[in-house]
Length: 332
Image (tube, rainbow, N blue to C red; front, side, top):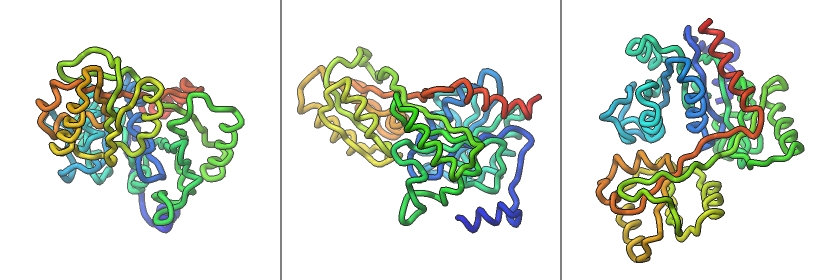
């Protein structure tokens, strides 16, 4: 990857630039770092002002090539995260998937010529594309400068790749983080990203669980937690402060739930014989769950989903202004 990056840097390999703002949200580390919540944050910020299209590769989908999300699509055809974006932001946002971002963007513009901004999920290493603005996400629990490239570590490329970012966001921080710790993190990030790159800190805000099916009462008893995300530890720790967690069914990231999985869960619940117990899934799992199994198996059970949003530890309005200014450069 480093040799490939050098060939782009010296101009032997060429990057393609588009005549509209293309914002990339990406990371250096393999696995979940919190890109999708940042995509959603930016969408909430800009969709009232601009016509926006999102593009991702659609990780673990069963289709190939470019595809614009529609009512017939699900997590199988477009991937779980694009499917989540589609159902949360339709019809205001055009959600699409495609492995080749350079190839896919013209299709978006052809089908939706009024598109003013393209938001790319997980395209930091897609060097054929020259974005107008790049946001690098790094997880507080595994900061990129503490890691090494695969196979000895989990980095997709050298930590020096951070210098391509316009801004670095440290995700999943504690809600309260000391000035000393923030300063130490910023100093270490600047060693790779450059002294001129702003660094922001965000934490996960857990909304109230959303019910599914016929049960619509608030959770008022113990829970069974089911996750199919990369790192469920912060969620588990949060839930343990609010509820008694009887059991945690932990599945791999992007797991497609099978009938066997659900039957195992239901059998465990039925054996407990306690109407106060609820079953809680993550929001990310929601769209894989309801469209890949028989929903009728769940409608009579107290199923809930846990939505999350990002909040900035501080200087959130400054970050918002930076994003909006990067767009205005093209639209004015």
